[in-house]
Image 1 (cartoon, chains in turn blue, orange):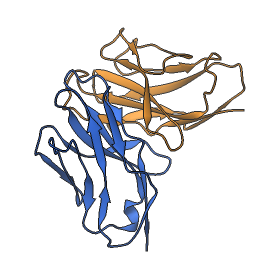
Image 2: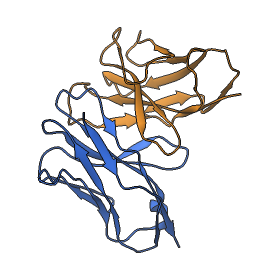
Image 3: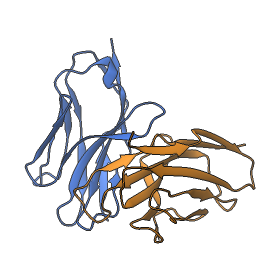
Image 4: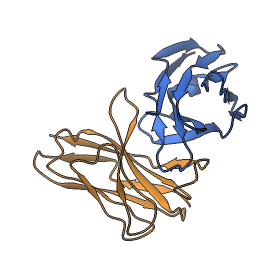
Amino acid sequence: GDSVTQMEGPVTLSEEAFLTINCTYTATGYPSLFWYVQYPGEGLQLLLKATKADDKGSNKGFEATYRKETTSFHLEKGSVQVSDSAVYFCALRYTGGFKTIFGAGTRLFVKA
Amino acid sequence: DGGITQSPKYLFRKEGQNVTLSCEQNLNHDAMYWYRQDPGQGLRLIYYSQIVNDFQKGDIAEGYSVSREKKESFPLTVTSAQKNPTAFYLCATQKEGGRFTDTQYFGPGTRLTVL
């Protein structure tokens, strides 16, 4: 069945370091792909999305490109801040769209 | 102020008791969802509703029940049949349930602890 696999955390970085969080997926058809962020004790917020192959989603300095050939949607940021510390979820939704499939989440710690 | 409200933020119950979690939205979205989140895990779908008076089971519906009598409201009841109910519960909405490009919006969550 369809699934999303994220790199295991936690990921610990120093402020201004480069961030990559890997996400790969298995899906029939051509899903939409999403990155959500969850701050402690809160719900999830959409960070960015891409709805077709080669689309690049971007927001708040984060970017991810929908790569159909490698079935990947890796999250990147050039310079992380302490305030980026959170859990990041990769997710997919396919045509017909009633269900969203989430990865297990990757916790990011950024040290000052 | 538009958004999704979940109450209460923290909820404690004794074993054997039913408890109802509230989810209200004023986004005028058609679809509403309930997810369960356990530590270190992703979200698992409990129930979803595409329109008023209609809902479907998700992947882990056993021990839970819902109703959708109003567009704005989608309460979740955790029954005594749910064997391990301690978790963080998230409500979400989507403008149209069947559009796979649409964003899901999440409430702040309710943390349920069984004593």
